[in-house]
Length: 226
Image (cartoon, rainbow, N blue to C red; front, side, top):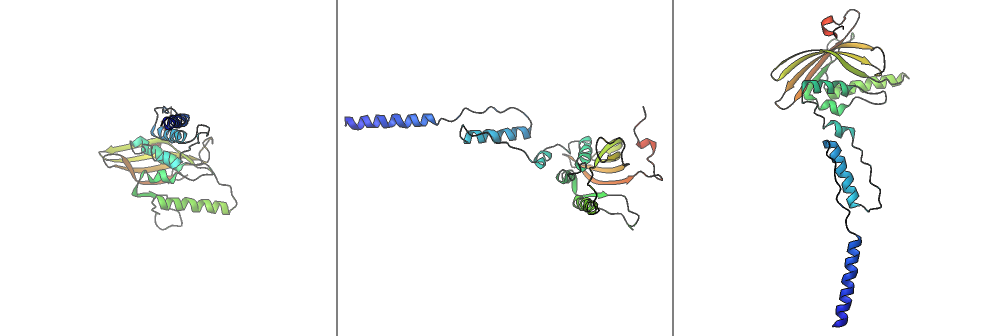
């Protein structure tokens, strides 16, 4: 009986020692930040706790789509107009942010570009159709052996009328191939129709025309001269 008690005590000591050697690491204090930042920290903290102490912490890079889907693009008129210009702008190696654009247009939202001289009627596009149009133009440019160019559009002036849950905006824009270009390669006016569902704003349609020699932008739609 004494021998059994002795060996039982030794075995219990060894088991307690082994368990102590594998004690879990102390809890990780997460910084208070935005939704995306906290989500990344939780992923990193979980990986650290579940892995061995000697393993390096993994690098977690959120997809751009995950970040854009958390932006309050429809929270205000200013926010959704800014999102429109940001989503369509891109460098020469990229395309517009189609996912973000789909997040600000109604499912039946329309984009109506200027009528081409060879066309009998206007072309009416949804975001998918606009995506196809941009990609076909890029493919045609590549087939000609020309290098792709960036597209950066920004608002320079705005006239806005809102009533209740509807807004009509005349947004004057400038387009450049690079943000650093001194002069734009084209200017025009976007006619933007917005609707609000009680929680957020949506783009119902965007119709635009470009400035030409025979179609100058009237002074009331340009920035005031200082």
